[in-house]
Image (cartoon, rainbow, N blue to C red; front, top):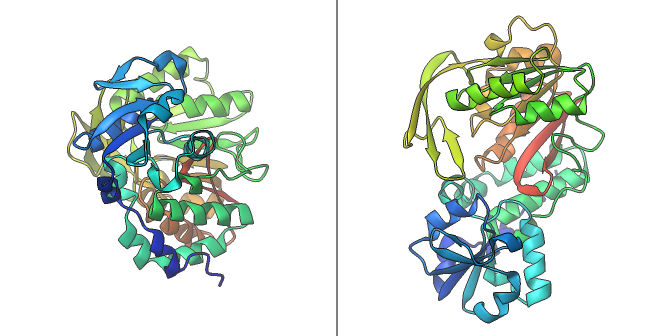
Length: 367
């Protein structure tokens, strides 16, 4: 077995404590995700934000001024840390900072938030599972996937956004090159359907020549999902279920933290503003009467492992192609591929992401 990661790679580890050696912090990226970075770092000496969008220059977020990038040289010095506050384009932002403004790599840090500190940048979990990580990388089907996962782990160890380079085989949403993607005539399952944005992508791509089963637990999103399916003339091809998919039938509660721009939901987090009772069930139960399933998309806030266990019958019977998110918990990077191989040894597994968002790992499963 090739060893893509070695214990020597732990020599360049950085944590959030590395920010303490800098006198001031600036953020790059003034979009939706910057609110979470500000929330985490507000007790530190944040000076301002930078963003490439000229429409934001001179405005403020949470009291912090948004500046144009060309002001970096007058504000940033060697005692300043730059934390990228955008999930997308982290590699490109870091590369630009280095090439255009001569910022040193060690002054640039990848995106973070309270959630990332708890669930993504978990160095001990990576250290303790190095053999499983290498085994996972070895079972991936192509070199692009292997390099991408190796770099993704290194980013989580070093917080160096230059490890956040895209897999070059990712060109379109929910597709891995010409290998794994939904096709005309497919019966598609969308777990974590939100308000129907992904269903609309599938529907339009396939010119309506498909059947889509949308599963969404959050009542507010589910209501918008129904409205959107009707307003976009998809109701004859889309069926919706107000469930959370898991490994057993039960009732639980979902909590959501909501601010001006962002909503995050997690069944495991009981601290939130919006509190909803939800029905949970196995996908095997929810779709027990469906005679064909060709493609499953699963992006469900860290519940992917439980949901896969609750989909064992479907996976073994139909052997559907899949896109499974693995970015909510660092351990999912190795747990999900290993579990998928246990459920179906013939599966071929690739690692990718949504276009321009390589920080968020997804696995694409074909046959």
